Length: 349
Image (cartoon, rainbow, N blue to C red; front, top):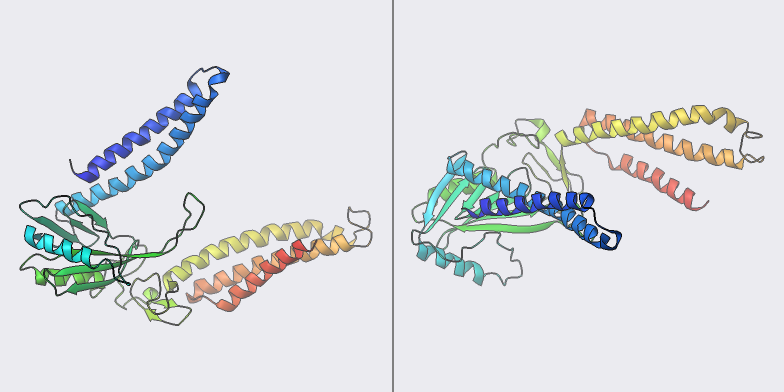
């Protein structure tokens, strides 16, 4: 059984055992002195459902990617690496791991080299080297560079970028990281390896999807810009190759603009109704629950007015972003200034 299928089966069994453990924690009629057993079952079950389910899902994606390559779907090239060439590649890869700019190779090396060699199958969205499968779809990881090294044996190197995000078990955010996928080229397959590098380098138009268009300059919505240094490209890039800051295309600027319009309208409408309901009391604070001096009424009016201004600003900025497909630092700074004002004002009370 292939390793991905075996891992998926084990993870799925772990996932199902978690549901059984959680059910047992609530259904077993245990005396009070044995409540610790229910606690242990619930902790184990919750962990098994979370980690087992996630692992099973990702291994299922790997199995599907392998099956698609086996059927020949979107395959760019396929070759065999002879055992001797494979050993030379492994030795070469391990000897270069001490460099200052070395990026770890995500390729999993087999414990033993098969007599027939190692098969390499490269598709448009996945690479399989032996039993090691690597999905390169959805922009995570992002292939930032593709290089064909003229060595012995020849080596294809795909430099990968993981944008990070989310939090680990300790609560620390996942930082962006870089890695690489290096695999050898079989003898007589230099032309096919060049086609692989050309594809992942983005020389030819890509298949349009939800994230990006073809990236060949025919669609102005593909224009991606770095708002820090001004670098522009039509290719799919999540970060700037010059300064390393995040990039955003016109298409995604408009999408984020729609989200901002919705959020801004919700804030503006809710706070607007609150202001309309409280306005008579704010104008005549005496006997309406506020202090006789009107200080509390003024405070409430300032806070609600600032929140309403923030909501209107977000709405207008969202509309502007939808229309132009661009961001504006000054509007963002203004909105952040309102938020900071509200925080400082609240801390001063």
